[in-house]
Amino acid sequence: MKKPDKGIAAIHIAVLLFGTAGLFGKLLDLSPVMIVFGRVAFASLFLALYMKIKENRVAEFITADRSSIGIKPHTLIPALGILLTVHWITFFHSIQLSTVAIGLLSFSTFPIFVVFLEPLFLRSSFRLKFLLYALITLFGVWLLVPSFSWSEAYFQGVFWGCISGLLFAFLTIINRYLSPYYAAEKLAFFQNGIAFIILTPFVISTINSVTFGDWLVLLLLGVLFTAVSHTVFISGLRTVKARIASIIACMEPVYGIIFAFLLLNEIPQLRTTLGGLIILSTTVSLTFKTNNN
Image 1 (tube, helix red, strand yellow):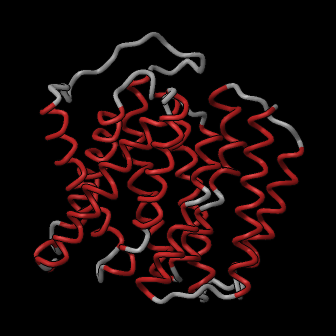
Image 2 (cartoon, rainbow, N blue to C red; image 1 turned 90 degrees about the horizontal axis):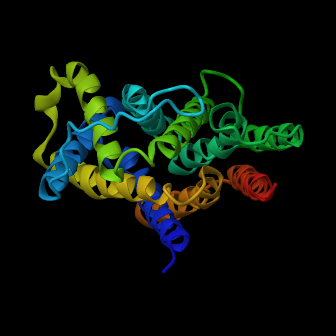
């Protein structure tokens, strides 16, 4: 299999795991902060052991020359951990406020953010027609919201889902930029490890309330649906452009909605389905067009 084909296959596998991970927001009766803490704790441990087996030293940084955007690669590592922390907290918060479908579909606006941000950081082209795609996507988001009132849980769910999408757009671009400098598992370890350090003070007083069963579920979430999926996704970005990865990532809510129906009996409303179709079709069309230009 050619390198680009391997990269695309890796992105597909990671997106399948990403989509299923959203269900843990409903399966676990824990706060988003605690869910993310357990997720990054087990992910960090697994990645550290994995790198130890590979004799890949965690503390090894690459001191590369300044890039075309004038930033040394290692200076971006802390930002990845912060972005990952807030991205996952807002993601699970969105799902808990609304439904798996609402959380995943509002988060799926992130490719729109990518095409606006990528030219600023990776010197790719930008065209005014991107604004049209953004307006169409906003219409899709509008359909997701039954009532534009902060007291409405679905409105809050869409809002936090879009914030999560914006943060994930930054993550995708920075990971794409850093992938030539660091091994995929090292990048994943750094951002999960930093997220673990950030969240520890916020959960230390309530950690004893987590049951043994919850820890087992968090173990599964942290290892398979985080450490493995995250490493595979970053590895795929070595040979796959961020925009192509965004296209593939559009399958994430599809996988999530299917599993939410099978496991949680969640059936999206017609308005949610229409809004989701507009968002997904717009982002797929946009990323295809920008890649061909």
